[in-house]
Image (tube, rainbow over all chains, first blue to last red; front, side):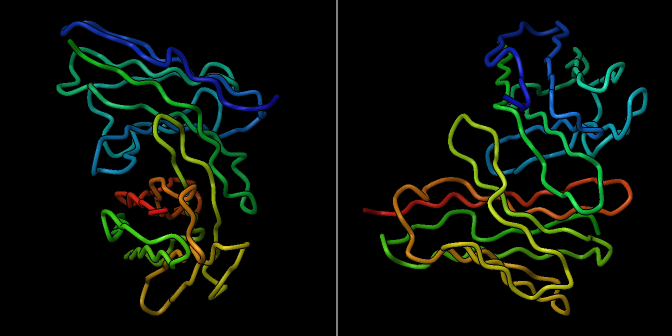
Length: 114
Length: 112
């Protein structure tokens, strides 16, 4: 089945540690996105990538890093510089064509800092 | 200019009633306005979407009304059911960058 796979579903981290969240898609989509979801704040864009080997900062990129070495993969690293990393992280993809606007989301990864 | 403002934050509706969620935007360049439905612990899923050259779009019990001059759009859920209880997000897409801006979400509870 085609879709977006995020892993792990739950992750616990000690303060000062970097963690990497995985996002893989087999939809052959060009564009991929990372969003952070906090209660009452909706979905806030961290990073997005429209093409392999290129990505742009979103609205809350500080303390995060990404790479886009393959079309199907867009991992997100939450660094120790991120002051409040406990959140629900969502990865999404889109064909990046003008007539296809749907964002396809993964099931999310919940990160808790201990 | 990049914000999408959504209201209300929460909504309680009786079964069979109409649920209405509103969103407003500032950037007239936005070219696509989707609504997403999210159940607890899951990723959002597209419910219905509209482009700014259309004033209304209906799919089953779900209707988007779009007012370009007022820069507002709304989701109407007719004959609301307990299974519709979820969080709903409006969004807007910036053309070119394909950057999607989301509203803050509305938690809908439909009472049986």
